[in-house]
Length: 498
Ligand code: BGP
Image (cartoon, rainbow, N blue to C red):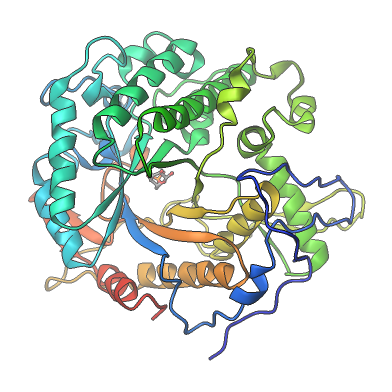
């Protein structure tokens, strides 16, 4: 069956962007004008990719996880306390008061885990480094045992033929830094700069793919505004906006550290969970509305990073709550990156407003819209297509990765050695189809990392929520690949949607 869609009406072939991050094409609120596509004329050629075609030869398939969620060994070999180690011990904050103490015991079982990954044909694994394992107090004394652990881990990955994609920060801030203000304070920025320098220098020989931060919104807004994630604070909008700014500075330091110490061939970028939308109908009017929504909602992270300043519209919106910006901050924040990672789970439906005055109208989801057991995870595979396409068009990105995509469910029992998670297989297949469609339409999507390799500690949902393609029995630490793991293994082997 042929699935090659014609290029959508607003794909105007233009010369490919010369810089990695070109300026943002203007979207004027209320205007019907559609920004020109940043995609080049190659978009037309790659539209020859059909539904049954393999993914491009250089397309990266992988799986993802993060240190605090799988490693366990929360206080072993000198590791310091993280804000999540503290938060999970505050009664009522995490489902069943689950702790990260043991998790998947990956700290002790990584070699077996990599053998299992390799047996499924996984060649790329996105992981994170635990900052408090390396600097137990965030700054201060270095813990050599922490560095040694990751040297052993990378050696094992190499032995099993698995390429590391390393995130410098995936939410496990050292508690000592939180005691000094956490993300509200520049102390954290300085400490992160030192930590980034240390780990990039230490692992330059083992790691070539770097990701600076994971999902700035989650460890700032949700953690310091809503208080649902560690450290669970409820600060003012102005303070929350400042935490965003400090996180952006740390992203900049991550880029700087890789440029200075990463060695030949090292690449770096941010992983963002941008707000994602889907045009209700794929018509020029709804697409333009969705694009205007995307630009507005992402102004304070992607917009700022790519423009080299906070966009005027954002500053107008936040007024006196705007972050304090010091001279030189945006030199760091807007350093050129090599790729952009997007964690895509869900999306908002947007259409052209019926009053013809507003630039867009978000359509609320009805109560019976399908979702996973995670209450926020409404199933919207087209999110992948539109998020990657808008990032290419609006920011001129030439190299995009889905760094997370997956679904969380509660009860997935092992029966006769199997977990028949057809729901996850379906989720995966439908999202891969949209990734494939994006590539066919010329979007420079270069890879896909599934969240997650193994069931793990899902933050405030503890061990209740399972996102893995491999089942973890937390009582015995027995791993059982689910049906979705077998399915994904075949997809990776054939490099086709099956
Ligand atoms: C992302 C995080 C992951 C993972 C996933 C599932 O936001 O980067 O670490 O946890 O979401 O989400 P959650 O655990 O919040 O349900």
